Length: 322
Ligand SMILES: Cc1cc2nc3c(=O)[nH]c(=O)nc-3n(C[C@H](O)[C@H](O)[C@H](O)COP(=O)(O)OP(=O)(O)OC[C@H]3O[C@@H](n4cnc5c(N)ncnc54)[C@H](O)[C@@H]3O)c2cc1C
Image 1 (tube, rainbow, N blue to C red):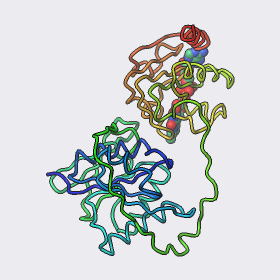
Image 2 (image 1 turned 135 degrees about the vertical axis):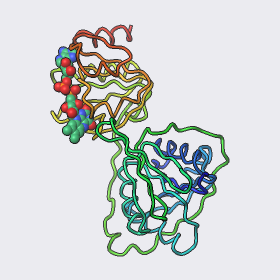
Image 3 (image 1 turned 120 degrees about the vertical axis):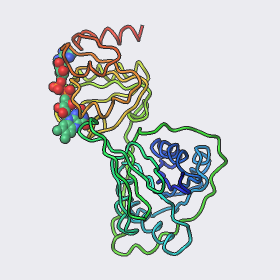
Image 4 (image 1 turned 90 degrees about the vertical axis):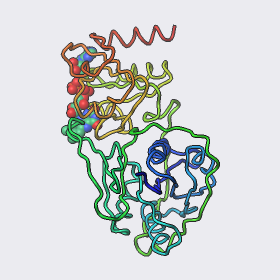
């Protein structure tokens, strides 16, 4: 038996919808008759793209005047449901993002409903909705069932599902009124900074080239950037070189960094620790360059190059730029 309605937390940059939102819409469509989005900001900015991905409606708060999304969106949803202005969905999906986590935690308190975190798949079994969470570096799956009788709040990991346009009509835009937030609304966002990048975003790129400690020194990371540029991809990193201060945390791939799922992932001088693998093993084709033939990364690689990154990477860049 399918579900009647799922609400997906929408995120966007004012122009386009975030990939995680579109990924969750794809899964929600599989499980429920009706899929709607709830979000901060102006719903009109996103209604066409959300409709194209199968959302029937977008419940949007409008401009929050700097209020934190977590407080405002959770309060608005709870008050709309409690006041009977909207019918509660069976399930909420939110992305495991800064704002997604904040909204989920506050919504849980306001609705007295459980949060199931770190979910990479969702199943419906009769009336029960079950979240699937991999633990111990993806070696064990934990299935968690919502038995509360309240709508389950599922925090979904990015790249768990594939976004897909279904050519739906523009979503209806509905107002989600934000009630008086009291002192909880006292924190204000005063400035936001967009990271500068002239290539695709790491977690949305079709090709990712990542470097690790095997590069030997910070300056050698320029080879990773060059190769990524030549391929039209994004540059990533292992935690070892993020911790060493060679590259910013925003480029870290893995359990405590970004999850990527590109068509091609190139790991250069990366050993293949489980915490790195959980962030990239869903890639379609994995190419590893490592001088140690026993390096664990070769166990997940489709193509392995046993060699020194200082010899292999310049040759690759030269061949591509020719
Ligand atoms: C709670 C927790 C969370 C973590 N989260 C993450 C995470 O999100 N992402 C992540 O990446 N790690 C994470 N880690 C760290 C992880 O366990 C590893 O320590 C880390 O991934 C190792 O990075 P590395 O492969 O670059 O370095 P190393 O393990 O030191 O490997 C370097 C590799 O380079 C090879 N090499 C050396 N010289 C050359 C050369 N000249 N040419 C070719 N190859 C060469 C070596 O053979 C070796 O295989 C986490 C750890 C913990 C405990």
